[in-house]
Length: 324
Image (cartoon, rainbow, N blue to C red; front, side):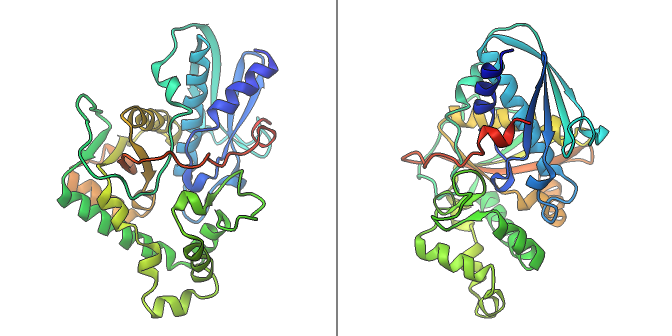
């Protein structure tokens, strides 16, 4: 593979999702092999102490790479290397996966959705959506109002539990790009447009999550700022994505991306409700209510719905940060 072609593939694959848009995946080309590494500086040690979200993001990035290769009729082999915890092959990174170039293949139809997938926090447009024929063995689709309301309340409770930790607030704030002058606004993190905040709400968020947390909590303002129940209730469907408990997060990241691309093909924007899987209490409650056994792990909860105009271009790291 030529260097310029590799750069084009990474440019397409960098669209893969990650928690708080941290984008921990890194790429290296070695002959006919592409190595995917995880940058610990782009992970969430407080919110994701076991690296589940980071591994999921790297698995999604690997699948995006495979899709970009398939669009060029390049076949691939995939090796999940997460469990080895290799920190030497790519110095400063945790080795996540190896992709090897193999015989030619037909393009994967989902490759066309890579540039079309987008995130939207909500609210979503009202009205029914056509889910006919969309069935996945690794996702429970919640479409009834009763369970959607329950998930909305559970999400807001888990979010409050999380934000009451000062270290969690600091971590969140470090990935927010609420000021239009933030130097990383175009590269990573979540900006005001992505969060659907007005300029005033963005200014309030900076203060409430920082120096004014204690008085804001005493005045009961936190629920209004952090709550997302209206957005969740407006969604057309909430997908409970689960995988075998034996899967590594990198292995789970590949079908996770495919789920999001399939939803995009149906005209649905997505927003991961990551706190519901990061919070052990919430994850257990959901698993018990929907009947997931010990052999399955709830990996992500995603609300989905149609929106009108497409949002602004996503913040993405430059290739100089991604190719190592």
